[in-house]
Image 1: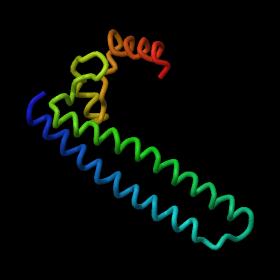
Image 2 (image 1 turned 180 degrees about the vertical axis):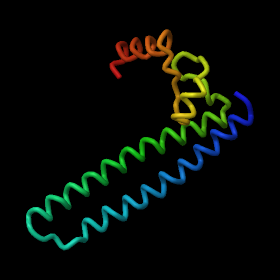
Image 3 (image 1 turned 90 degrees about the vertical axis):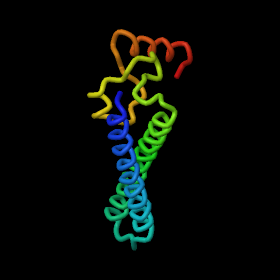
Image 4 (image 1 turned 30 degrees about the horizontal axis):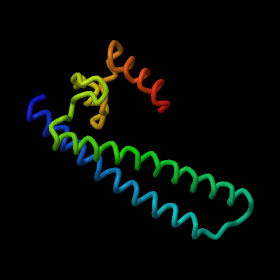
Length: 124
């Protein structure tokens, strides 16, 4: 991977990180607003609970994505970005373009087999 590629991915990851932090702040405010609402009839309460649950669920997804982005930025600093954490081969640039925080290559001949083997032996 070239320095230009690394710079492109680092910039993308940093932009994604800012976007997610903004979304998490929005979700936090939305949850606060939902908790403050004057609840009307049972349908309003059900909808309010649904919206609050949805906002919390989205926040959890965003937190996981944020952690993956932070790990990818750390791999850039360490010099291991773009290298599969399971089999050690290079991660395809098409995969990194789609998922810049990807830590595995998902190569069917090596990575997937090793991942299945690892899950079978560790139970995770």
